[in-house]
Image (cartoon, rainbow, N blue to C red; front, side, top):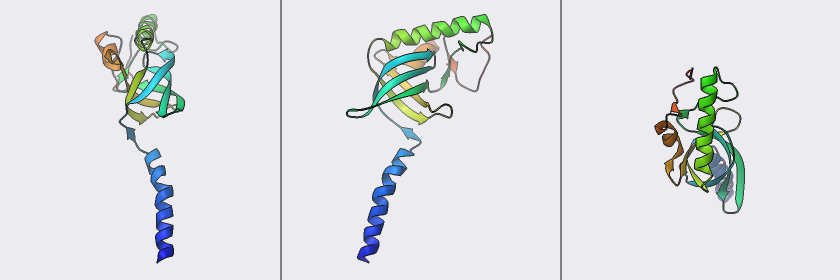
Length: 142
């Protein structure tokens, strides 16, 4: 009986953290700082996941789509994509940000998250500026 309790306790101790790592969503906030802006809806940040533990990761802004830069279908899409990237660079230059509503992304090991700057939600700002649209599958910008 005592042995079974010990085994059950050890299994819980090992499996409980593994279940937490597989969580579908982390509320946050997780503090992060910008490394670089890839395009209007994708950036690379260094996030402090625990005190003194930092991770560099790609973040895709949750729920929005901005025009492509490298794979633009037309010149107008590329120009708007460059403006969206400039908007994000300026917003992120003001200091650390908070990642919230963090989810596992389906491409290239990146995460999906909302990014909160001192001026508010970055995705909403892009939408208000006309530099993004709500993400409902890939749509043409041309």
